[in-house]
Structure formats: structure tokens, C-alpha cells
Length: 339
Image (cartoon, rainbow, N blue to C red; front, side):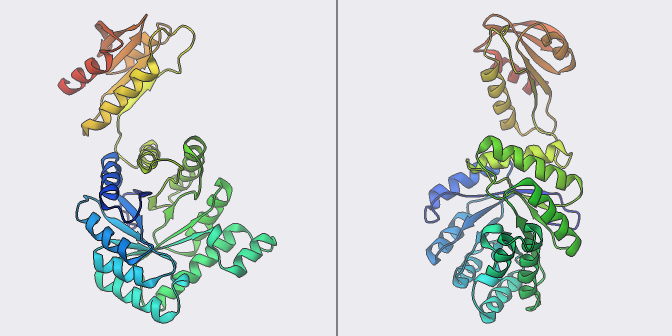
């Protein structure tokens, strides 16, 4: 992370930390969706052992999420984690911070300091609630305090996050932090919400920050499956030209003229395209009727234009026939594969 490396997408597993099979299955789904690294909570020593077993089965790096017990951090390092997420100020005295920093340094593992409004030190939290200081000032001050604890142990392989739960505070916090440090930044809106509002809030905040050159790795935090977090994160990067383009499906919102199930067909086409992992994807259009359909079809590589329970199929801007609604996705994929 940092130093000109591509912006990475990460997520966090929500499976029981002792369920090796469940953790592995979910992590593999996330990797298939494009996830670059995945975080697992490690609340006890048994969870650290499970993390080690899961890591052996995954094609992507894993991050151990540690709170309060420094022994869990040491156990996760011994189990083979690729990185730690912890706040050194909440794992005990200097001897414990020193033990973790030394173990991580020996293995050349980075540590992410993750500060949220809900986990601020008491004096900083009181300042925010009494309106003596801004959320951004408090988050950045907390982060830099934690950074100093590690730097005092000559540990400098540090990533920082200062997540707020709304767009305005998130923007202010990361802009302020970017002025204070050259450490790589993990960017996100914490507790962003359920799928739709969380996606919107995260997309606005991350899109603005990344367009300003702020952010080295991202997580879209949703009250939803981690795979969906990954997909949203990937689309944010693609929209900014920070990842190679993925499947491109143009589809209309439909109206009263529509007599074919555009929603279903467009979703099926997009899902099948994502499975192919192509270096270059064709532009596919799925349109509901003859108003805009033929025009969009001429601009797409492959297109479906809805009729009454069927679609006209266009390839290279030319109509090549009609297909039933049920056969439409399959027919599109045949042309994609052989194009």
C-alpha cells in the first residue's frame, strides 16, 4: 500500500471466527468478487489458530483484527497473518506495545491503526461532545497518538484510518490527516448503513477523496454481505479509472411500454459476464422497448431490445434475430465468448 501501488479493495468477514469452513467459503467468494485482502476478527487465541488455518486456503492476504488483548496479536502473527489492525493504545502498557511491534517488525508485517468516533480516548470524546473540538480534529489527534506509540518502538510500517459515519466528517478527517502524515491511508465511511444508503454515502466520500489523491486502500462498510462491499468498492475504483474496466452493461429503468423482464435479464447478463474474468469486456446493452433501444444497440457491441416477451438481438449494431426472454442471457454469452 502506498508508494504508487494500486488502490486495493478490502472487506471484513462476518462469520463466526471459530468456523474455519465458513470463514474460508466467505473469503473465497470475496476473492472471486475482486477482493484484494480480507480482515478477520481475532477475539481470542482459538480464533488466531483458525485464522492460520483459513489463510492456508486463500489466494489473498489476511488481516487480523485485534482489540485489547495483545496476546491475540502475538498469536495471529505466529499463525501467519499478513497484517494487523489494532490501536496500540488499547492493548496495555509499553511492554505490550513493544512486544507486538517487535514481533510484527520481525515478520515485516504492517499495522493499521484504525480510529473511529466510537473508540476515541475519553478526553478526545469529551471534547467532541462538548463541541470544544471537531470530529476531524479528535480523530486525527487520536490517530497520531497511536502512531507515536509505534514510532517510539521504531516501528514505521503503519497504515492509518480515521473513519466517521457521515460524509462531511469523513472528508474533513482524511484531508486533515493527509496533511499531517505520509503514511498510507485506509479510507472508508464507518457504519455507513444498509445496502442502498451505505453504498451512496461510501461512493460519495470515497469518490471525492480518491479523486483528490487521498487513499491507498478502501473498504465500503455495509450492513450487507461482504461480497457486496467488494463489488461496490470495485465499481468505485473503476468509475475513477483506478481499476481496469469490468463488465459494462447499459440497461434502461423501464416504463409502461416495457413488455419483457429487463431487470431480470440485465442482472443475469451482468452476473454471467463477471464470471468470465476477461481482459476486455464487450459493451452490452439491455433495453426495454423500441424508443431508445435500437439507438443504444447501435452503440453497443451486443444488445437486446425488448419486445413482447422477447428481445431483438443486435451484434455490432446490426440486428441478427429475435430471442425469447428465457434464452436471451444465454445467447448474449455465446456471442461474448466467441467474439
